[in-house]
Image 1: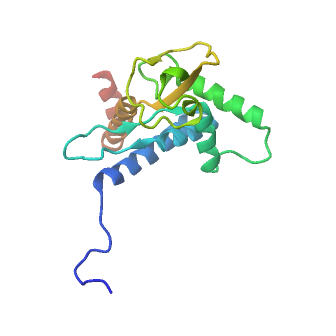
Image 2 (image 1 turned 90 degrees about the vertical axis):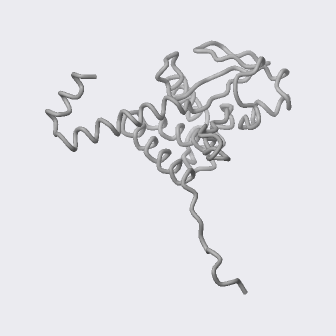
Length: 192
């Protein structure tokens, strides 16, 4: 048997907060962007995790994912409809990813091109999620657009700083609108 006094359940505030923020960002994207964009964000958010030691670091970990890994994750999550033309679906996902990674400071998704030969694991980088290769290395460079050669692979990840800023602005605007009405919100916008 179990000892009396041992807790059955525990809580983890960073994980709970992360779940709530992920839920809100998916809803935010689905309300403002067409179809598959929210699904791509949901797949990329699976690679975002709270800090392992919240007392030491508040930095959220957002891992890189290759295009095939994103498509596979979307399939695992049930976001791709069976019976549809897979080539068309991949083209739709690719187009949405290209729109999400525009060369802007306000882009939710960042893209980089990695030379396969320079990354530890070689061909695994083409299909892996990018775990263990965080940050900008000499092998990776961030690019706004461009063609990828056969020796390179594109990787994508959520830009968490942008997500936090957009959510904070959204929550602030909603709070002002709820508290002071439409006119109060307009006055608030004038002073920004």
